[in-house]
Length: 571
Image (cartoon, rainbow, N blue to C red; front, side, top):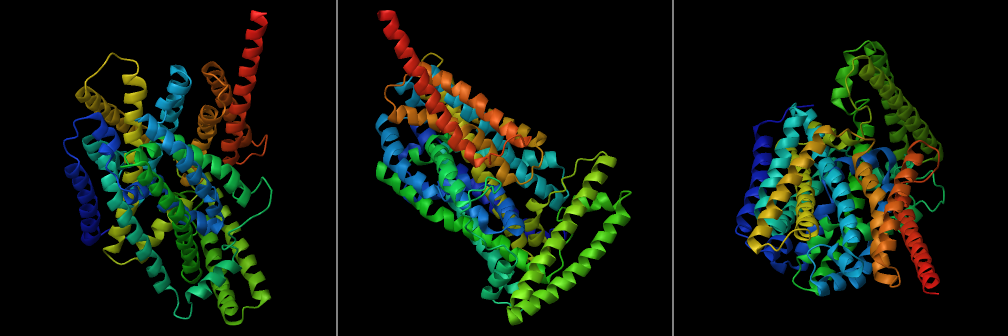
């Protein structure tokens, strides 16, 4: 990978420092809780919509999603099919209720409906899963940039974390909202530039239409899967059913998102912001996946490394497996040349035989890459060095560093870091406010407005330090975007079920819900572990649906038993 030059460094540093300085300056002097935690309720719908999108679109989105498409095609977009449904439900049910009760956090509502212990449990479940996720959103860009820049991973974790902490602690919710608008502009512009540069670097006779044909012949354009096969992680049904429950819980009960729209000027502004997000999110994810597919097409005409993680390649080439690895690299060169000729033939003739040959060549290349991963893993064990052989998260950054012109490399790195900062800022802001409102304020004597703002700043700082700590001990998973969604799915179904019980099951009381939620969380974690050890087949998206149904069923059953006991006692 080529090193960054002064132009890239200038673009990268100016972009990031401008965002941090602007957010800090614009929101200085928040003295009361309403201003600090709800942004003074001044946000317009477009600010809410962009802030909601920026919170969800972390650096993981822009690092992992193109790599996901490069390897598996466009099918991941089905994950978001439940989003519009969730947005409608939240606009109709959640927002009017939160606004009427004038809550600072979603969990305040649970005490009004149930009791303090249920509110505290829901808040703690949020703090656990979002605290872990905040660490991963710092870790994701840091591990990639450590390879790119050659910097120590620990140093990068601390730098990214501190940049976010500065303006999040200083300005609270409004600082997050203000900076996220500008971060999303940088992100949209950067991804558009990347797409057009990919197209420009394809051979002259390869138009966009032909590029899509090549991707389709390689199995990358299969967007919809209507099968009920649980072995397929992403299908229309997992997206609509599991995705709807995940999105309902994430946007309706996760304070990192709830806090974004609670800052709105009115119910209408909040609702329009979420509708805006619902309409734009799927096209945005589709486009990011399409960028990944176009990167795949680019590498059909330009030789790619057998593994995109340069650290892994360096490790294995300096090990006892170097000769075996070099033999694989030579074999890859032959496959690449053969495939390039087959694709050129397909572009000129579009015959069925060429399509089958492309598929066979892709299978051979993927098998070769898997053999390379095995050698990397062996070298990693023999040298006692922890290096990730799975390279999905390195694909897009490899393309950026090796194929974009000077200046634009800095811009794309700014996109990745901006996404990391925007998502992490929302998470820290929500973690700080939840700790302040749901735990600190509720369990201490009356405090002044100034005391509450100070406490929220200190808690935000504390969570920032915790997130940096999690980032420092985190490990690269199969795919980071999946890891974040897996963490959410373990907790979200249970929390969503608690809220649905509060909204629609008026006969259920606090004790039943509290016991049911504890049982459900244990069961969901158990199901996840059984799936991980391949004892059952349950894709993680279904945990959202299963957890929600289980907590509702158990709570209703417990409440009915309690009522029966009461009647028996009275009799």
